[in-house]
Length: 256
Image 1 (cartoon, rainbow, N blue to C red):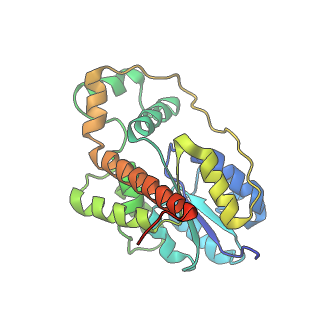
Image 2: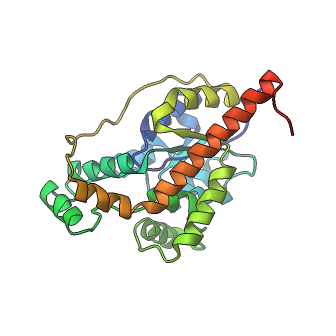
């Protein structure tokens, strides 16, 4: 059966999603992707503001893949049967990669970043996994929509419990969820579901050397990302449980 659904790849930053993004783009063809490469190039090689991406989405109804650093709630703008894909990464590894990204872009210096960690502060936004998965839909249009979404990625979290519950609920609704440390399994799953010929690749390596953090600095990272740590462990546990159930069903040992 031909796969004719739209695909939404909710690309959470620093989860090794660039390689998957490029593989998906290659499989469906550049002309079927939103935001387009032209729009990305117009913004210096970065994903455009959300309202511009959504505008292009309306202008290109025959698209096949919508992807970007946009919250999962953006699926409200997509067809109901859209196939959703998310990649999660160990929160500590993801944060360290994010810090290195900030350093490479000149948004901060290594001395400033380490000083922040020593003082108990995080030099990058906290709990990004939960923010992207559990963020509430934003009721706004145009530049205000983009500005408010940008704020939602870094503003202090008002209700940690509520955000975590929404992230868990959303995580369970994702059609295909993968993990950075097991990308081959994710590629295989996507290919099975869509029939797309995906090619494993490695892109977007860090442009900044590895960081060596003290125990105190690592503790700061942990304390500020407790929601993500809990979410990550919960999603991994559920995936392993589902894999075990499927195995038992195949062997005839599963009993309801």
